[in-house]
Image (cartoon, rainbow, N blue to C red; front, side):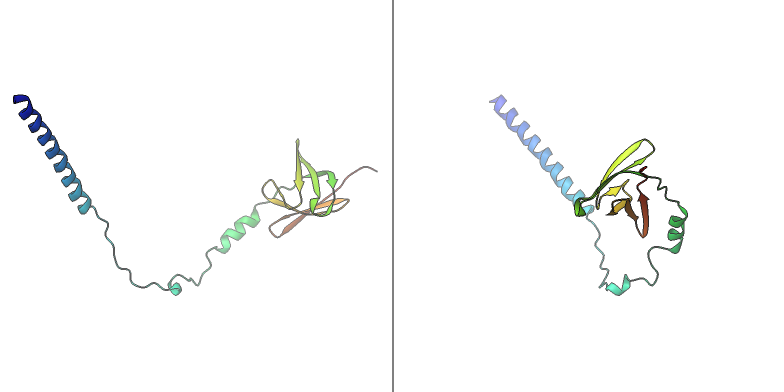
Length: 133
């Protein structure tokens, strides 16, 4: 009988400690609840600003950066929407399909028999085929 009483008391103490721990967690979670403040009604006019989000200084800084577009046209495949060109810069060759970006900056917009036209934003770059005839 002694073992049964000891086992019963041990289990009772263990359950009491667990319940005290959970009660402690309950009070801690109540104490740490977020504070919700009423900010009232917000209208869209409060967010609209008179000034633009991008200042003119950013545009001036972008214009001062010169874009290095020193590609040489070494191959053309014209075929309407499936046109592509092969360009070379330094020791690297690039195959660019119509509408695809070259160096993640220049989009191929037009391919002729003798030239290719790339666009970077509002600027256009034309590369002529320098084949020796």
